[in-house]
Amino acid sequence: MAYCAVTDIQLYAKATYDTTTRPTKAAVEAMITNNEGRINAKLAEQGITPPTSGYGFTELKLTNIYCTLADVCRANHTESETVQHYQKLCDDGLQKIKDNPGLFDNSKIGSVSGSTKEEPIYEWGEVQW
Image (cartoon, rainbow, N blue to C red):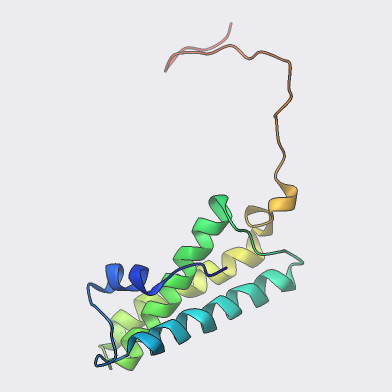
């Protein structure tokens, strides 16, 4: 399952990709796939099955978007500051997998379903005595 799509990249880049653009839509799709492979390799290093939903998936989607935007900027010969910005966000996202693997491991997320204990509901600012 892909973390992002060309439409996500178009939204962030404020551009449309097709067969006549640089990079082409096919090239952007290839970049997305390549970056998904990089992300999944980092997850595999931590023994994590790629998540398909939840917070971890959202974080990985952003990482894939940032990595792909860096690639798109390189393909367009965009100024290096923009490339460096997206590359840093990409690298930070990949590092987060190593530093906080539990965020991405759906098998470690507990469930409270079936609990019979009723918790009190407090309004904002209220505390239990």
